[in-house]
Image (cartoon, rainbow, N blue to C red):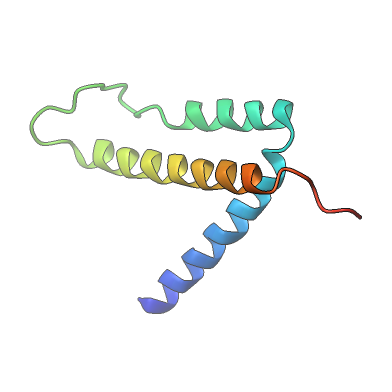
Length: 87
């Protein structure tokens, strides 16, 4: 289990690094955000899951939270170093 956690952490780090580079380009960043916002729509279009959310809603909510966290991390990293590296 620990090996999977390390691999996921490494994948997340690579993803944040790539997205932070893309965040420096407003047109590309807007398109990435638009596409990911579409992916965050709950499958059954339920806005109120009730007292006990369904498994699908809970899974989608967890994914939405992680996507938002990744985008926030990428934005923060891009804002901390707004200049792309010289070739």
